[in-house]
Structures are given as C-alpha cells and as structure tokens.
Image (cartoon, rainbow, N blue to C red; front, side, top):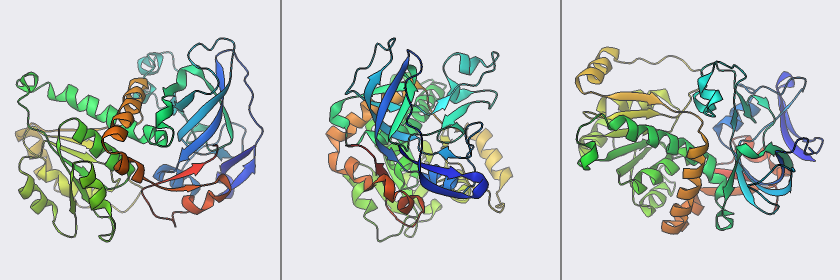
Length: 365
C-alpha cells in the first residue's frame, strides 16, 4: 500500500510502498484511511527536527490527525462494524507498571515519558491507505461529520485544556454561582487557535483572536463568522489589545511562538489563567521581565499551565462539538480545511510552501 514516510537517517521523506497490515489479534480493527490532516508537527518531522521510527524500521510513517472507515473487525470487537467512521487517538501508554497515569488510561499525563505516539514516536502513523488499530483507541464518528471529522484531533487540544480550566477556576468561591466573567484572548489564527476559539465561544466566552497572519487574509471574516472578534497585530499591540478588552480572564496560546506569548503574558488579568498549547522550536533566547511576571503570578492569583495530547473523553467531547460547530457555523467550520491533496501530492503541503489553515491528505473516498 502507499504511505508517506520520513527517513531520519537520510533526512528525506517520500511516498513509499509499505506492507498492507492485517488483523493479528481479536481486539484489532482494520481501517481504510480517508483523511489525514497536516499540522506543524508533521512539517517538523519531515524536516527531520524530530520523529522516531519504530524499532528496526528505517522510516516512520507520519500523520496523526485522521479519519478512517472500518473495513474489518477482530472476533472480540463489540463497538464497531464495517462501514463505521472512526477517529483514532494518538498516544499509547508507557510500559512502566508504576506510571499511574498510563495504567489508568490517561497516557496524556504520562509520568515517565516512555509513551509512544502514532506518526511521531516509535509507531507508524495514519498517512497510509490502511491501518490496523486496537478497538480501545478508536472513537466513533457520526456519518454526518464525514467531511469535517479530520478536525477532531486538533480540537481535542482545546477540549482537554478547557476541561482543566474549569477545574482550576473552581478555586474562585463565586464560580459555582455563575458570576465569573469570561473574557478570552486566543493567540494564533491556525487550526488549533481557531478551533479553540470556537470552543470558547460555545462555552460562553467573549473571545478575541489575536493574530500576526498576513493582513490580506480573510481570517477576520472567518472569525467573526462564528461569533468571535478579530484583532490583527498590525493594528494593535498587546497593551492596546488589553486596554480594549478589560480584565482578561483567559489567554489561550496556540501559536507556538514564545516571543508573542511572553509579550502578552503581562496583560493577563487578575485571577486569570494562561494556557500554553504550542511547542516552540529551538531558537535564540528572548529577554523576559521575570520579576514583573512573578509579581503578577503572586499578586494577581494567576495560573499558568500547559496542555498536550488528550484522553478518550476529550475525543468524545471534540466529536460532539464538531457536530455543534457544523450546525451553528457550517461555513466557518468547513473553511478551516483549505486544501485537499492526494497521497501522491503529499510533498506539496508538507513542504510548507502551500499556505492555508488546514491542508488534508484525502486518501480514501
């Protein structure tokens, strides 16, 4: 079968012929892959910044944002049948018996760092014609979401982060009475930021997307189309943005640029929460007013946390909310997918030379 793979030792990637997988245990399911999204992680892997092949393999099949169709099931499978649509999760637990996170099925909080990840770390990913996966790692998708379900995995980032946000803000005595104000700033106009903004609008936040994308883009129309505000960095610096909003209760970072994140951090409001979701590349150090930030953390009762990967409940929540978004804002949601390419054309979007919000490798029909 065809697959897209990176050869780290040779510093190259290519469309290859890879053996078609077969079901080997009763709890496995064979999938025909339909859509695989491309994100910054995939581009960094094909640039050989990181990415580890399975033991004994010279290459790693990439792709972790995916949608597949069940075509065959093992004898012990009970939740799926041929024809069902599924979104696989990404991370697999470590083998350490003392890792309480992985033993509880929450490998997104793995203590050891010994986890593996499909398409990233020691496990082949989903950018191939067929995949075999264990039933427990698959999440059912309604047929009505066929054309947008590839957005589920990036939305899980926001689902997990916002779940933690609500848990943290229970520290405020008036949280249970519904008297919390909800003003949010989302940093970044990519898919993680825009899906996060949709989630926050749905949760009742007065949401502003702050972006450094080219000013000629139609991002403003997209953002206002789902009920958020849009501010371009060319028209307002962080101080001006904060002055126009008032007390900022949440800053949701989805840009992967530490310079913008720390430039915005001093404007997080009293009792506010700052969520990091981006992973910056290794660049030159930046200057940060650490004393000022530390004073704010203490005197303003602020919380800063990072969130990565997601558990099974976040996938279920994301699938449900993609359905909500499709009902409320069909044009805006669909416009996040800006290009579809065949597997033979994968090199074009993976090279980074093609723009857009979310490019997708359309493998199956």
